[in-house]
Amino acid sequence: MDEKGISKDRVFELLKNYKKRDMTHKSGRILGSMCTCPHEVGLQAYTMFLESNLGDPGLFQGTKAMENEVIATLGELLGNGNVYGHIITGGTEANIMAMRAARNIRRIKDPEIIVPKSAHFSFKKAADILSLKLKEAQLDNDYRVDINSVKELISDNTVAIVGIAGTTELGKIDPIEELSDICNEKEIFLHVDAAFGGFSIPFLNQLGYHMPKFDFSLPGVSSVTIDPHKMGLAPIPTGGILFRDKSYLDVMNVETPYLTEENQSTIVGTRTGASTAATWALLKYLGDEGYQKIVKKCMELTHLLAGGIKDAGFQLVTEPQLNIVAFTGERIEPCDITKRLDEKGWALSIASYPKAVRIIVMPHVKKEHILAFLEDLKSI
Image 1 (cartoon, rainbow, N blue to C red):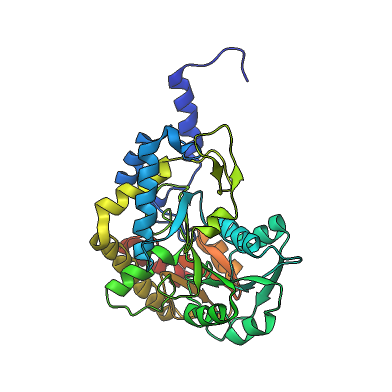
Image 2 (image 1 turned 180 degrees about the horizontal axis):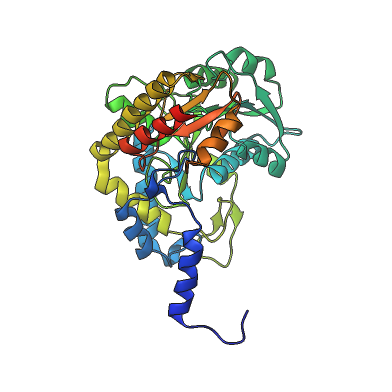
């Protein structure tokens, strides 16, 4: 740190230089990220509440009231308005909280969790932090969790089973309805990681896409992760965790004697209210109709992309179920495809199971971006 500060103009001149080194979603060339350009309404609401701290809600009662409304609205979107939860940093914190609740509600020695092989890496973090034994269930031919594999892994020490509604790599939706039946029968906590699909699947259903059930409308579902900072267009970081019953929050409580609440169940203590305000504003501003338009456009572009990839001589790993497309080439490795497209200015990613080029068609992607990408793809 310098002994004396520099001028504000100089500070922002330097910041602009750093910013120039960043890619921007607005360019339409970031095709491997589940994040997107935050909506202007969300940004404005976010800046209004930068000083609010939901870790000390008695000081920010208006922000807390908004959080309660947001949780109820998201619950309604996910099949039950009478849910409990919080707006937090993202899917990782939400998944860790869910596994912590499942562990604490049972209080047994050597607890185990069962997750699909396609599960997000946050569950490995959860297992490490919470001293859980993680068992990975195999996938079926369409890269969804194999129900028989799940059944084989269940033991007396199983405290939670996880299903994914929009897998990170391929966008597949696990057979949550069957998992719900299993967990209901065996009284096992079922967590659904809908970080990606939570803001898409309900609106696709409204549009007549007939998506599979995955939420609190299924009696066996205990908790759901949903990320407003993905398809919800909220600023980063904004995540959500919802529980069917308040007891799941209660078993995570620790006393907070010097704050305006008696106890706290979230992982972080100081918790921004800005994310809650942004989500509240976007839910009010966009409504069902606005989000329907967003996911409809993304799916239309997804199908355009998938068709163009096949026309260019590449092979889809699976037909897209949500707005993610993964593909391979017969005579070129996925890493070589991404390297050659990176040289043309495209930021892609690699799926690990199976190894493939992975593209997420987020709301910042437009038709002209897809057509330009397909031209470059044909050239390699």
